Image (cartoon, rainbow, N blue to C red; front, side, top):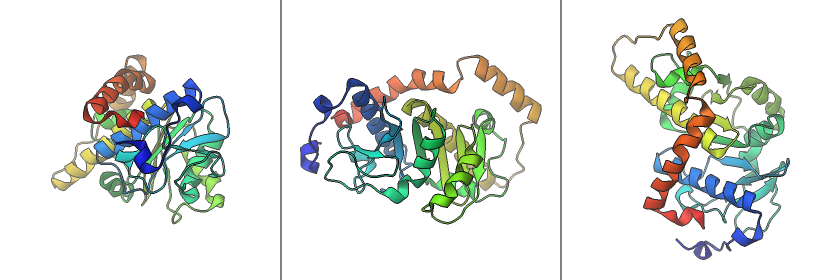
Length: 259
């Protein structure tokens, strides 16, 4: 895919090497979300803070499908969702409400990833939320919050409640809505979403079997999580471990995200 066909000019020589690296990772993340079947047409977002700034972010060009997004096509915006660079594509300021709230409150949340997957929304409708029934859920449950549905997230007055419900956690279930994860890097946010989404998928499949579910005891969850955090299972470590391989996979499928 040639970005010029989408009316987007190459930006690699017009931004810093640090920004370009984040652009490549974020474009890769959009492609991976499409590859794993987590997209909802064009109606969710993944954002990343521009390196060296506190109030500039990268977001998807509104109307471009996730498997079309490239490093150059990502749009640079401010904390209000307004474009700060030329782009032939609009952005969706309403879709940035959730992201702007978290970016403003959490300096460490350099990437915010939000989905509306079938499994995630299904679990978000369950009063008990994510159940402790799988090994995958162990690391998720230790850093998981919930935010009650207040209608489409379009109002600024919802931001303080959203931020409070996330707190210092990595993952958030938006009840009746979807899933959200944050990370200090794009890789961290993606790996967090992988485990959250997989935990939800396991739960929905287990429930559909109709049999009695076996909960993991609280003490086992706590001891297992402590072991994970003491070893290579730390989120940042996992991101650094699997991200190069995920990029290699994308390169084999379609390396145009790097354009």
